[in-house]
Image (cartoon, rainbow, N blue to C red; front, top):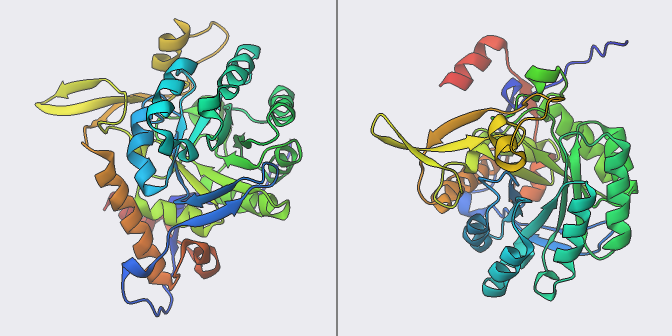
Length: 348
C-alpha cells in the first residue's frame, strides 16, 4: 500500500484566470483543429468534440446532426453492420465524422472485421475500442491486434487515467487514448469500486504523456457545463467526449416519459442495470451495476444545444485572449477555488 499526497483536481476545483485580449468578438475565435495521427497518418480537420458511444447518445441521427458542425460521433456498438452500411450509403458525408465502436471479445473482433471490409465503410474516421477498464492485458492485446489488422485506421483506445498506461496503449498501436474513469454523470464506478481519478488532473497528466509520444488524448466524462470543456481543452485534451450534455435530444434513442406534465427522456450508463438487462438479459451474478438510470428533460434538437456549447467555448477563449482553440492551453492559468466558493459556483 502507498499513499500519493499530491492534490488532484476535478473541473469544479478550478476556474480559468482571465488575461488581456486583442479579440473584439467571439466570432474571431477558430474552434477547428487539424490533427495528423501517429499510426494511421490520417488527418482530422474539424471541431474536436465527440458524442459518446452510449447507446442513447452515439446514434446515427446524432451523426447526421453533428456532421454539419464537423464534430464527431462515436457510434454505439450495438448497431448491426447492415444498419451502418445502409445509413452511410445514404449519408456518405457523415463517414469522416463517425467512429465505429467495439468491445474486446472475439465476437466483437469478428463484427469489426466484417464491418470494415465493407466498401461503404472504408472512409469512416476510425475505430473506438472501448472498455471500462483499459488496464487489462486483454485490452492491450486487442489494441495490438486491431492495429495489425487495420493499419490504415485511426484507433481510439480507453479508458485509462495514468500516463504510463497512455504510453503503453500508444506504443501498442492506438492513435488516441481516452482518459476518464468514473467522472460521468451516470457512472457509479467510484461509488461501487472506490477506483478513479479526478478528471482534470487525469487530463493534464495523460495529455502530457500522449503528446510526448506524438499521440492524442480525449477527455472522456465529467463535463456538465460548457465551461468544463474549456477547462478540459485548457488542460491539454485534444478532444472532449460528451454524454450527459448531449442526452435528452430528439436525435437520441432514449425512451420518452411524462413526469408532472413534462416530457423527459431516460438516460443511463452503459454499465447500469438497464443497459445490462437490455443487451445481456440480466446482470451477471459475478458483477454489480456501475451505472445509474435517470430521466433528463427533453431538449429538442441537439443542434441548438451544440451551438450553445460552442458559444461558451468561444467566450472562454476571448476571456484569455486565445484566437483559436489551439492557443487555449498556452493561455490557460488555473486558479484553485476554496470549498466555499466552489459550492457557490456549482450551485449558482
